[in-house]
Image (cartoon, rainbow, N blue to C red; front, top):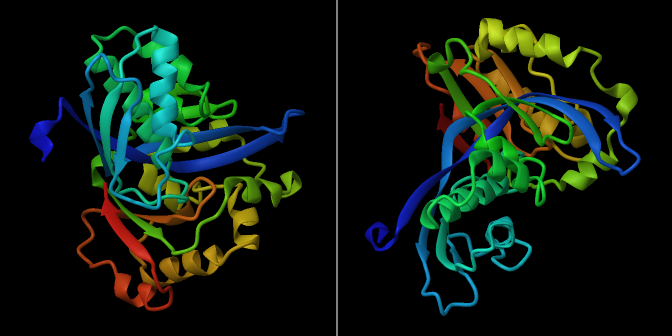
Amino acid sequence: DANQWDLKLKSPCKLNLFLRILNRRPSGFHDLASLFQTISLSDRIYMSKLPHSSTEDEIYCSDKSLSVGKSNLVVKALDLMRTKTGIQQFFRLYLDKIVPMQAGLGGGSSNAATAMHGFNVLCGYPASQENLLLWSGDIGSDISFFFSSGTAYCTGRGEIVQSLPALPLSDDVEVHVFKPAEGLSTALVFKALDLNKCSTVVPESILHCFETDGALKAAANDRLINDLEAPAFSISALQQLKSEIAMHDTAISGVMMSGSGTSVYALRSKSNPTVFPFDEIAAKFPGLRHYQCS
């Protein structure tokens, strides 16, 4: 029952509209440049404060396959907020998991950011937005994006976030996200990455196309670029899925894998009257899930 909670929050996921991998650091991390965009596909997080005598959080999740132990980013986010603010408040939290996992959609990172925001609200705003953005880098490089405007150019390991205005004509963009049954570990995708085979297009020029023309036109002009597609395709069946989506719908402006996979998304204009032919694609990929969003 949603009424029994102190706070009810949306936890949106993201797409990478482009993702360039620039180099590998001696530490093993990679420098990237990417345009991140939130979409309407979201989890829900419900939070309530526990009595002051409580000494641990009570975390519940609709997806029983997701661990709610110390490795969970929501748990790490609440621990981080207690450490940084010095406020020893514990919570009862329910995560209604809708965004698919191991999908390259940043669902776990979004959940962590939302939990940090929830802690801040329920504890009387002890931290500024700048604090939250800065602190979030301690537990994950994608989390800081979710404290942005929803459209952002991200560099470094992804933790350097430049918020941007909404892209032109964004209200006309219809997003179709496809999640196959298989998952991919980000570490395995990066292990298969050959930096010599990455795109040579300058990230700022790709960004300029999106900022000037909007996502649909940039996609139609081959600006959906993801340097992690090639390594992901080499260890999965995702290339076949991407090809099938592009082949079955001529109304699509572009198709690309998001992040390190395994979700693949297609961009279409909302003004196009044709129905997306999902059944024809799903017949070839058992367990394929489809989400229509904006």
